[in-house]
View (tube, one colour):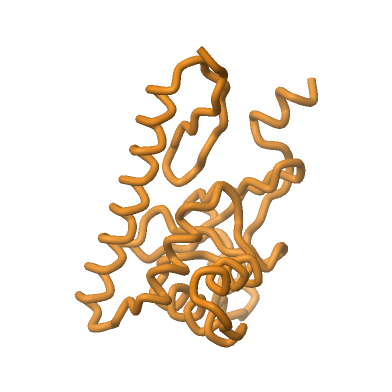
Length: 180
């Protein structure tokens, strides 16, 4: 048997593990593909319910973000779309990203100017992110206590909080283990 890579999925997050059997890898890839398709179907349903249209370009941009194992930059998305569809300009990608952000299907990692899929599109929310400085993986968390605390602190100071951007940087469990 040959050694292959297996993708393990937790939410939208992927981990690579070494295994010695092709069958589990095929099953993991099938599971990943089903998760992406499920995410796309959920997004289409949500957009339809809101009277918005998930165009083919918007859908493909979302699919690329869902499939990524770390935050994806706009120019990475643009390069992939150009390889599939020919010449496209940055405005095409930025319009699609703006739509996906406005409908809360993705989040922007501000410090990296990159995008990740939202793990809970049915419930609009403020998120916090844990970002690995080593591998670049980002994990979305949602802690309502943090959200409310920041709103309260803003209100106490007469500040109207319009948007929260919380990005915590450090090492993910896999990278911490690798460094020890």
